[in-house]
Image (cartoon, rainbow, N blue to C red; front, side, top):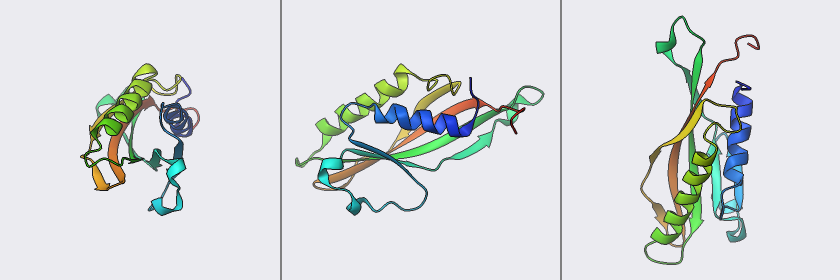
Length: 142
């Protein structure tokens, strides 16, 4: 296990890039201007720089870090109710994360923690997805 924040995030970006039906995956730190992207670049997953926290219950043991990541999935649907597009993309995201939940051995586990309701105006919709990754802190590298 590589046990390092940068590797966990890089492997998460790689996994999300492998999601069937998603054309663009990017990482951002402040507000994202979605108008910069064309319809051909959608569906798009935007990964916001995550917060992290040490697990306080592991006192006296090897330190574990919880990395909470929010991603926003933008997609186009020309129907009044975008449920079929949304359901397909969500299934593909969950399958990709579930298929390699330890992100190529860079985390102990990664899972979907919450999903917001669909928001936006036709034809551009978005949904926020919470992900949590746990990994052991490499104490020799810090």
